Length: 421
Image (cartoon, rainbow, N blue to C red; front, side):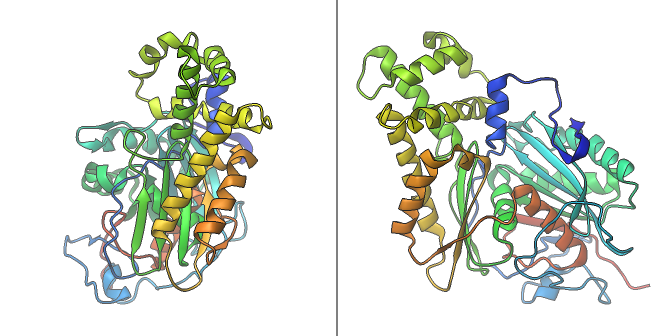
């Protein structure tokens, strides 16, 4: 990883090919590929465990937080809709210093924040955290994160970290090693005693809507819709590029490459325009399987072709196949949103993730689908991105103000119990 000057992300590892840069600029490095977000009921506010290993009480906010004796932490310090800002403002001596991480299918972003304001970073890595038979590789994540964290703290000249929040793709179903290894390792290496490990869909929701009821469609390399009535979480899709993520960047890119191969074979449903672009980017398509299938970053490579599909669709009437792909993607997104949106109250709906930078070829059919499927949900712009959501979670955890539905698979918190002096 490498730090960026002037607050602008700069990727580590040298200069990437132009097309990879385009995919990252569209947020295809986000990859909300999370799966397994459970929808069972649970109390509000969060702490999975206290430092002594005892299970927290689950019948009240104060009991669930379970972090304090003698009222060290306050509850509910920030209201709904509080915006996260960036810059070294006057923050006060007691403002908590936190580290926030957004780990997706195509890389990682890390920032340092004081009192909810970003003061260091973002630092960007284009190397995805590895996933193996035991799930997300906690050691690989730490190897990338620790030197960055130390550098950000040193550069900012701030005190000890009060909390760390890590939003990770796949955490809900593949996060066992993270839950087992990260809290103790971060405490040992960084001295932090409050750690939140969250599904990237939760950080996306928190960044977009904060603690308010509604639904968020998070779309980058993958796709997931997550909704809450502030009593429980519900999620739809987010099953990864092999089993789902329908309508996400990898899905669109794969459909575009299929259309290119259909044109190559002379089958119906092909696109000559997409065939030309595929060969310009990847070489002769006959060799595409051999170049694509072995790659560990296959979802990101597929997603890198999504902008080509949007560009072809933008040529009015020139490529109906590409336009049909994006209309299908919009239907999939609306299906997922409708499945998780609260049925009562006044839910809001927001879009987050770089895939929406594809613009009108995707957004116009999506808006039409949402208006038909969810006429009672109010469309609002996202307040912030998933990294902003991690900042908010870490800051609220540091001051005892975390007010989100509890679910250990989606929002896992470890905090050292503090005893009165």
